[in-house]
Image (cartoon, rainbow, N blue to C red; front, side, top):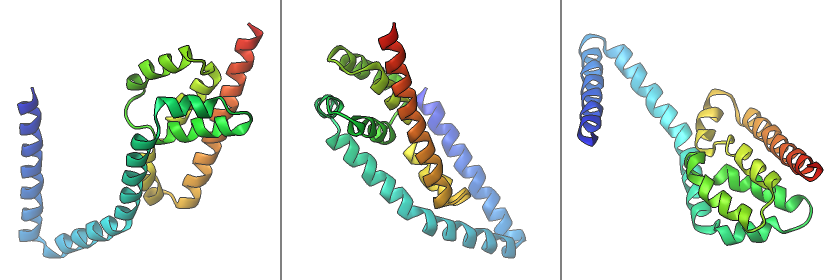
Length: 165
């Protein structure tokens, strides 16, 4: 199965290269314009990709289940902010995190904090460069801020509802 996927990727690359070579042969002005746009775009977003890569690497190294339990036992807003940041920095699909979250719940992590974490996973940091490119840094900061606040509110509501049960 992997070979078929690799073949499709190789075919796609070949088709794109042929397309660009045909544009180069028939209309050099369009080719140069597209090339300049591509390299200008890459110069703009490469720093953001490097920043995201560093953040994700650091989060995988420093955020452990023990630290999650330690920070989630703190009082006040710190535990909620930690869960928002942990959700933001966590990589991969949510399905991968379910066993760890179940383990943390068994060790005393509240359902509200788990909900805050899961809601915060919607703040996908790998989309950060793309969002900045299409919108602006100001828009992305406001969007992520509102979503972070909403995740905390959702977690508090879930904790309150579960206590009422």
